[in-house]
Length: 117
Image (tube, rainbow, N blue to C red; front, side):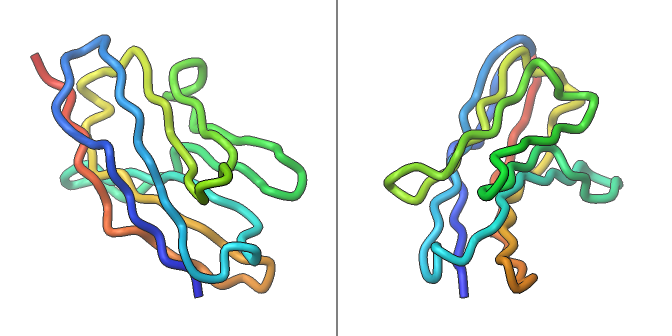
């Protein structure tokens, strides 16, 4: 089992930056990919960014390309989502997600990001 805890959300003005953190515990060595999803009010949860730990390939939703960066899991078992040039439409609850090589999925509890002037 893998447990995930997010932090770093908050209120930021348009054009500003935030860095979200996702700290993993448990069977960390089994994580094959890590990702960030978001869910805005009244909308479906969508994939924002993902990184495969084996191939190191990344994938981003078109709306965040060039603005968001998903990091590798570092020595403190933490992955980050660096978000720059934030827009009001980025407002959502952001969730960390991991998947093991066996297909087991884990979700964090979510962290609120609000972009508003």
